[in-house]
Every structure is written in structure tokens, then in C-alpha cells.
Amino acid sequence: MRLALNGWFYDQPHTGSGQYLRELLAQLPVAAPDIEPILVIPEHAASITNNQLLITIHSLQSPISNLNLAKVWFEQIAFPRACRALNADLAHIPYWAPPLSSPVPFVVTIHDIMPILLPEYRDDFRVRLYNALVSAPTSGAAAIIADSEASKADIVQHLKTPMDKVTAIHLAAGSQFRSPVDIRDGAIREKYNLPESYVLYLGGFHPRKNVRNILAAWTWCDGPLGEYYPLVIAGKLPEPGDKFYDDLPNYAQELGIEGSVRFIGAVAEEDKPTLYRGAACFVFPSRYEGFGLPPLEAMACGAPVVTTAFSSIPEVVGEAAYLVADPDDTRALGAAIITVVVEPEVADRLITKGREQAKKFSWQKTARATVEVYRQAMRE
Image 1 (cartoon, rainbow, N blue to C red):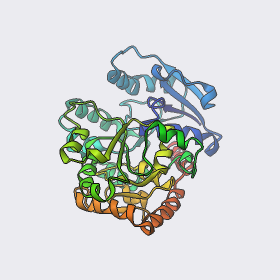
Image 2 (image 1 turned 60 degrees about the vertical axis):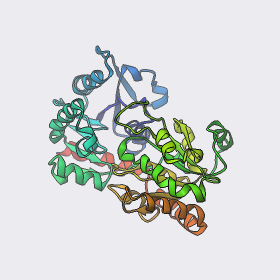
Image 3 (image 1 turned 90 degrees about the vertical axis):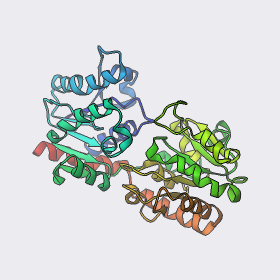
Image 4 (image 1 turned 135 degrees about the vertical axis):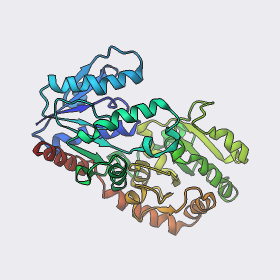
């Protein structure tokens, strides 16, 4: 089978779509030696070489300079043309961007349908237009992959897709998150000026991530924890003045907790395990996730996790995390953080269960299940 994969996000490993594609490509040769994967990439990813991937790469040059328009051109015109030119038997679009017309059967992975479900997206006509563009051809997919049963249910309900056309295939924490220690840990901690121990949030800042409520919850934690376990907020903050995002440093000042909150900025992918390993508690009070990799990565690293009982998160963490029922209950969230930090038996239990829970997920399993979807799509 000759398989063409949309590689728009391959050079963006900091994104979930990029990480998913990279891990899948790394496992495909082992999971299915009979499949010939061809990665179709845009010119901005042309620095990728065959020596790095050990698979065929097909690079396309865009006639469009605007990045957003170039992305649509790549998805809707260039990638389908490449599938035809490469004589592909099947195409895989590893994020929600199926083409309106495809010369070959295609599989699409829909990590989530947040732009449809969450109200904050609805004010932007460009988002609404793009949603309409990618929703229309979704029904023409030979198969759809979701990251979780929760995401599958959303797809079936809101995209009116037959349940038997959607397969839930879990993601996994990479092998780099399973090591208990790294000789670079000390240097990495110094790089980010990390304290001896801390409470950690590492992730994005979209309103659904609920980071604002971490700060509100910290008003309950600041007194008992702040001096010895400051709150570390890791990730690239949005540009100041963006009305879509909260000004979190300013909000911390308004709450009077700025003395025990550290915003450390963007974190390199290879440095993330060190941050997780050093955390006395990892907090992730998201309102919606298609899967929820950060809690799984934290558990694989041995960090006790406090998170919310929403969307796919309970499916991912099982009984291995401290679940808060209401993401808006900042007092309960603060109490959960304090409990995990000050009660060693609670933390130890979560650490043990977390490591075991993380072992249930692997990219090898993800790749094998994905190959089965490919084969089924070809049989249809």
C-alpha cells in the first residue's frame, strides 16, 4: 500500500498535530513494513531530510505568501494533486483538514472539534468559514480517527457521522517521558531558573485551558505553599493586548500573588520531562480536551496530577489523578493542590498509579491501531 500523509505540521513538534504525525511516522515502518509512507510537506518544512525520517518525502512549493491562505491551498489543492501524482492508494490527513475533492480514499484524524463546540471561536468569521470548509468533506472520508471515546462521541453527535465510521485511538506519552532522571536535569533547571520544588502548569493559554482559574485557586494556596512551592506557569504567553486571551501576569498582580508565581515562558520540547520530574504537583484544570497529553506526560515522569473530570481527561488519567469535579470551583482546585503537596501518602499513591496508568498507552499501540483503520478503509 502506498500511503500519502499530509505533512503540514511536521516541522511544528510543539503542536499536538505535529507531535502526533512525528510519532506515527516513527512507528509505521515497524507496525506495517508493507506500507510505503510518503510524507507530503510544504516548502517551509523542506529542511527535513530522508536521513532523519527514513521515508520518502515529497516537497511542494506554494505560490501564495500568506501563511493562512497557503495552508488552505496546500490542504485543498496541492495535497490532493500530490496524491494523484504519487499514485497513492490511500491518503491520511492527520488533523481536521480533509479536501473537498480527493483522487484517492482518505482517512482523517480529528483530534477535537473545539472550533464548533466552544463559543469563543464563533465571533471570528474566518474560523467559521474554515470550519464550514473542512466539515463539508468530512462525511466523504473512508474512515475517521478520534483521539478518545469522548472526542468520538462529539464527532458523531455534532458532525452527524455514523458511529461505525469513527475509531477512537488513544495517543501516548513519548518514551522521553519515562526516564526517572536525566544527566541534563540540573542544567535544564538552571536554564529556566526553577526553584527546588514547585507546582507546575505547562501548556497552552487558550481560555479552555482554564489557566486563569489556576491563579484564582492559588489565592488559597499562596499562604500555605507559596514560600516553599511557588507556582510555575510554563509556556509562551500570548501577545499583550490580545482580547482573546487573559493577561495572566497582570491578573496575578490583581490577586496579590505575584510574589509566588513565576512565568518562565516557552519551554523546549526536549526540556519538558525535566520540568515534570521536578514538580511536586502538576495542575491541569482544562475544560475541554480531545485527549489531554500533558497529564499523561506528567504521570509518566512521576509527577502527581490534579486535573478536572471533563471531556476526555478521566478516560486518559483513570484513577491515577486527583480529579476536581467543577473547573470553576477554584476553592476545590486550591484544596486539591494543597492536599497533594502536603500529604506525602496522597502524592505517593498518585505517583505510583500515574506511572502504571501511563504504561497503558504507547505510540506502538497507536500505530498498530491506525494501520488497522488504513486496511479497513482499503477494504471498503
